[in-house]
Length: 223
Length: 223
DNA sequence: TCGTATTTTTAGCCGCATCTAAAATTATTT
DNA sequence: AAATAATTTTAGATGCGGCTAAAAATACGA
Ligand SMILES: [Mn+2]
Ligand SMILES: [Mn+2]
Ligand SMILES: [Mn+2]
Ligand SMILES: [Mn+2]
Image 1 (cartoon, rainbow over the protein chains, first blue to last red):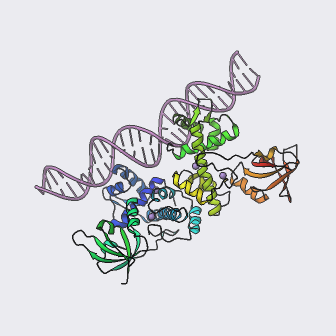
Image 2 (cartoon, rainbow over the protein chains, first blue to last red; image 1 turned 90 degrees about the vertical axis):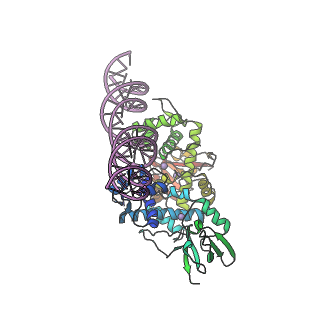
Image 3 (cartoon, each protein chain N blue to C red; image 1 turned 135 degrees about the vertical axis):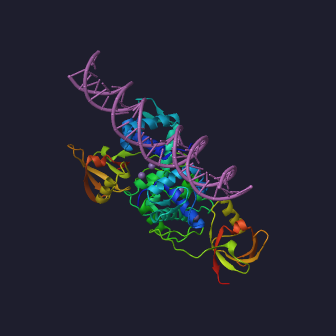
């Protein structure tokens, strides 16, 4: 396992995240938008990551991760999510405050540290946003997840993760009482704007925009 | 409080440490030796730190810290020592394994993180090597400390800190049963090589070289 | 005190990660 | 199928932090 710079690690993680949605290939501009840099900088970095064998890259044709690149990305994501658990569980941060801090801590690469931290936290399987924590071999325990947006009236589900970790979004969820683990039933879907009428935990009804429901991941429940 | 790079922070910490011993001024070569780099690189960095007002620097004449520089150094040292406590108290590392890891963690600069960590650890006053942890205003609670080397036969003292955190030294201390908090009485001093005959915790006698006693700090006890 | 040794600084180089502007390529529209 | 638009890459800078080699300043010993 070669040692990477923090910048290289951030790029790998970004490519991994985009591949999760996009499928197949990610473009230079998508990466630039995600990590807030310029397309020219991305091109430079892609050449370098390709030389190191971490991505498949043909000029102008977009990139995907090689197997070693995917493994590296999952190790970085593992560190990021373990630190997020630490910050929330032990240091009592809220889930909308931890992004920037975990973004730095993830680059401290000391294998023993990560193992001890994992143990100390009780081998958590999911981070505070509901995302799965890869094991030390870079494997993910995947659960079948669907976007809340995709449910039809009558369907029941449990909220398992959020797809957007901006402070604004997470604070909104706190305000309206949506949290990881909440049960939700879709009461109605407004055809005009795709917004949903929800029943949360069998008690509170709530109306959410399509923008919101597209950023919430659920596990379908037999209803 | 300006934002510094990790390199700048490491230099400030090194200068602080050398000033603690040397008094007055530190030389380019001393800094180079401590942080394992070349004198030319140190000269470059000194120019930059002087421009930022963190050190007093006259070419060829050595450096000392300005008041802002000293404050910055103490903030970095605070983070370093808090993380060392975390690694030993919570993650069960031994005191000879934590140097490199804390050396990286100290550069994660998020004020709220440091305050929460401090609170979580129960506001510790000393790190695992016995060194005092500066408060959040950069103040040190100082206790009068003497080098064990300086004691004369008959004098009693308590070990409060070590002056050298190399793994080799700390492992040696573990092996012979010297630890922070141990009571020690000087039984004899060998004039030829300055080595000491010690009684540890009133039970075990031990012979240590001057090299060792020079790296142990004690608080004198009325005997 | 003067010449040599040591220390420190400067000059010039490199790799990394970023940027802007321009060129090259690919995609879209008419 | 051109012409135009959008995307991507390259060219050329910059700042950072490191290096070696050479020059400058200081310290020291005869
Ligand atoms: Mn990061
Ligand atoms: Mn997360
Ligand atoms: Mn450091
Ligand atoms: Mn320490």
